[in-house]
Image (cartoon, rainbow over the protein chains, first blue to last red):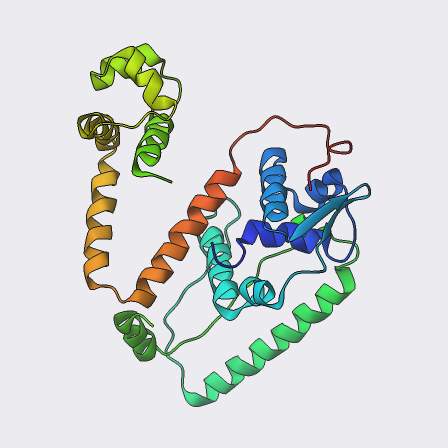
Length: 159
Length: 115
């Protein structure tokens, strides 16, 4: 598989620049024990994670080619889609809204300004709480806007 | 991996708990021969077909399989290379996530030298 799956990314984000034990990773990620273990094994096999007596840490000698594969635009897109799909399919506490909205140019500007405000609010909130809130308790938030015509064309052309 | 190995691996995936005797009955191949085939002995075409037919029977029990198969065949004929890559990537991700949920026996992590 090219890039990382969302599950693999979660493990890597948990480890970050530190060296964590298996139990710490499992606590931080909130993944089931077997899933967590299997992912760690897969990441070790791919040479992305390494283990030593202190626990697991991200391999600092990942080749630039591999880095590009892990963090490239296509890989990130696929990962985002995975997450979005999971949110859309969520059975409990689902918050998802999708609408086709008629908007004049003035309202469009207001809307974009509100999105910009929302973006800064989220950045501030993240900065404030990132050291105290474990990864498993963080929120997945996404938004996007497109013109129906161009979206339709893209669906037809497939690119 | 050879075609023979792939077929046997798929067969074991679809019939994981099956004994040699049951495999023999299902495929119509002698039990000693099944044992040898599972241990890497070269297959005859008729034996390969017997395993394939058993796999297909199992697969046919799921109506979605035929649907998926048909749509994949159609996609192969009309999609561009780029579009096929996207679909493959999507399926690969779903399969990988599914594989991660398989069970295992937990070793003693702090002592295990995994790297």
